[in-house]
Length: 90
Image (tube, rainbow, N blue to C red; front, side, top):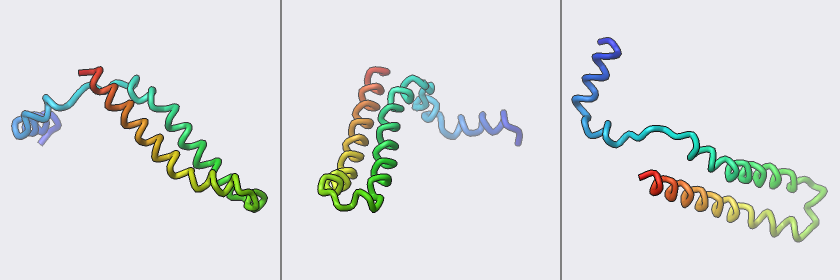
C-alpha cells in the first residue's frame, strides 16, 4: 500500500479527524518560550544553590522549598496563556 492510498484509507475511516486538526502556528509556541527559559533558570539555579557553600543560609533553604511551587505556578501560567491564545484563534 503506497502513501497516497494509505492517506485516502485513513481519511475514510476517520473523517472527523480532519476537521479537528488545525494549522500549526509557531507564533503561539514562541510566546511560551520566555516561560520555558524561566523554568530552566529556576532548575539550574536550584541545583547551583544546593552546593555546600550555601547550605547554612535560611534564605536558601526557604527559597529551595518554594522552588516547586514557583515551577507549578509557571505551569499554570503557561496553560492559561495557551488557552487564551486558543480562544483568540477561534
